Image (cartoon, rainbow, N blue to C red):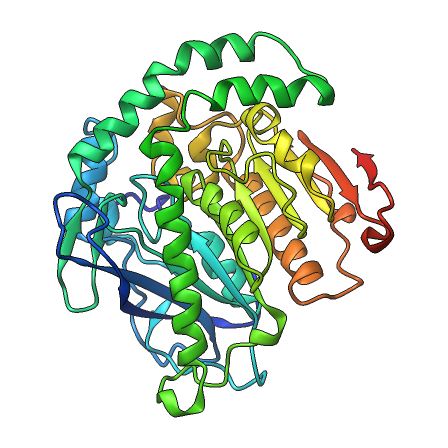
Length: 401
């Protein structure tokens, strides 16, 4: 049985959160992996969206057996598989709210070996404030995927092991980097030296697979939005705004790459991801926020510095990588493995959700009065870079708090 203190917080917004699941097969991508040469890429999504009434339905559950067992195994039994029975603040197949004619769309991407609901609190928080949030699954590299028809696809062990070996091989270089501080002029060559060790590996190259998953789903959402689609979301997606995108860890790398590659994505967020991928020191030319642990100041700062548009680098002190996921609510014992830091879970949720909401209000909904500079949290360092007039090639202005 779950202890009573293991529960997810209620969303802060005015909407009840609905939940829908779909999957789409991409006829243009076949045989992405050697072990499945004839298989077309099938991408699942979870859609969190604004609704008005839970209609006396039971809330959805957090996970499923195979997925929960995979995380129990990965944690060597420290994380209980019973967490799959935790209710989430979302209800399946509710009618979408008619309060607004259309709603802005934000993509979410899980981390490597993560799962589609790993940031369900963030997804529900955004949906409760009037966003349609599309969580994209990445088969064979998520811990487990369950398609709407019940089929299960587990993570491929060989690919996962190759990723782990690549990371382990480069840990000494990273530990050396952490022993010193770098000026803005010094950080790019230092990061370039570190990333050079990854460029021929799957860690670097599979970002392209994940980015293509997102761009394909964007194509499918455009079709769903057509009135002739018969979808409950027909006409409800505000595509004129473009898409927003966010993601944790490898999903944060994905969000960055998608912003570089696809003009439909108007702005994005990297949650605690080293910048693996060819975007790492490129000018995204779009509003972009990097938010995470002090790791970001080493391995994501070049991406912040290169951006000629509005950019944010937000460091949450005394945090670890998994502090930016739902694990803060159900697996506090991971502090023993130093996968979670010392910060209060309520504060961490407030930081993650508040900055996401303010960012997307400002740069996706384009509300001029949505001011991220007004957000203040203890132990959170903010650097922002505002492009005063990019069309005239004016240098951006830096602001630090």
